[in-house]
Amino acid sequence: MTSKLYKSVKVAHISDLHFGWFSGISEDKIHACRKSIIEFDPDVVVATGDIGFFGGDWEFKKARKFFDSLPFEKLVVPGNHDVLDGFMIPKINPFRKLRSFHRNLPYRDEITLGRLHIVGLDSTTFFALGRGHVDIDEFDRFSEDKNMIKCIAMHHHVIAIPGTGEFNMLSNVDKVIGELIKHNIQYVFHGHRHKRMHFRLDSFVWDKCLNNPVDIFTCGTTLAGRKRGGDPYNNYNRVIINTQTNHNSFSCVNMIYQPKLKQFVPRDSGFKI
Ligand SMILES: [Fe+2]
Image (tube, rainbow, N blue to C red):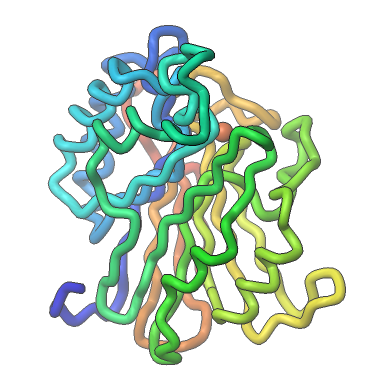
């Protein structure tokens, strides 16, 4: 935990970088992304998975170069592509899961910035690569301190993302919703479907009653060529969370890459709650 007093916490939320041979990353895009994040000057860079494409060492080494060029705290969680361990089928086994990922990307999986506590969850599983699964015991990492504002960063979507061709959700989504309620989690950052959206869960989710709203930020692919859901842009989120109130209070601006300008620019005026 840092002792700095925070009135607000700035999060640069990037996702689905897909460092690899075939994923459409260019040096121009990497350079523009680095420059844009440095301009934002975040308290933490949160990367919500799919850092590689085949999950091999050579991809994560490239990713590490990128992360190390960002002079900020980094919280990085794995995605379904990151478990492939170089796409060597015999290496896909639960006992070696994410070996290359952890060997090459030694960043935080949890951070406390003033009152804000962000916990990174590993939502990957060999048995539901596309859907994901969260080990419910992982929620015990949140403290009981009611004064803390709690956030999750993970790869898979809690609620299905419209227009991305897949409507399934975490294989244990109802238990995860239960944990969001139990721990009063207010914010979720995720990626996976390569489409930027914002959802606010409020009042009821199915038969469960929320104590507080849960704001869910999804991020598109920040660097890779494969965009989905009708969104033509590479993008990332600049989120500023107000930590002076217990209510959900934040601003979010989605930054999109413009190839002709070779820079990231605000998608629109953003939104503020
Ligand atoms: Fe993914």
